[in-house]
Image (tube, rainbow, N blue to C red):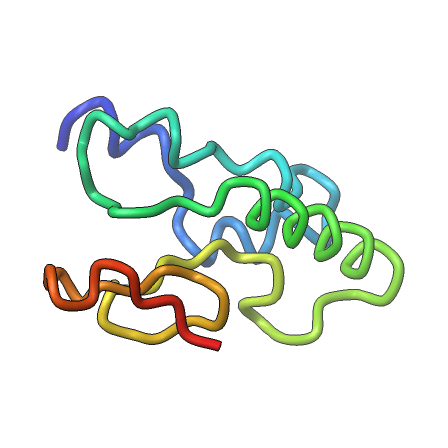
Length: 99
């Protein structure tokens, strides 16, 4: 366990902190800060932050839709995501942007 492990909260911590106003989805550490790890081919930071702000408002107003509402997730590059380049780590799919 290195210093990066201490920088993250697990899903259970995030779930319990958000409705209690001790944290919020928009304050979750940005993956961009760890780009040196090369863990992701693409990070949709603007979309993620917009979704986080919307989730924060919704959660504070109506409560979470479910236990994972507002929790950031990552999708493997083999799952087609509408409007997001999905390559499946293949040069043949380098320009694949599902509708």
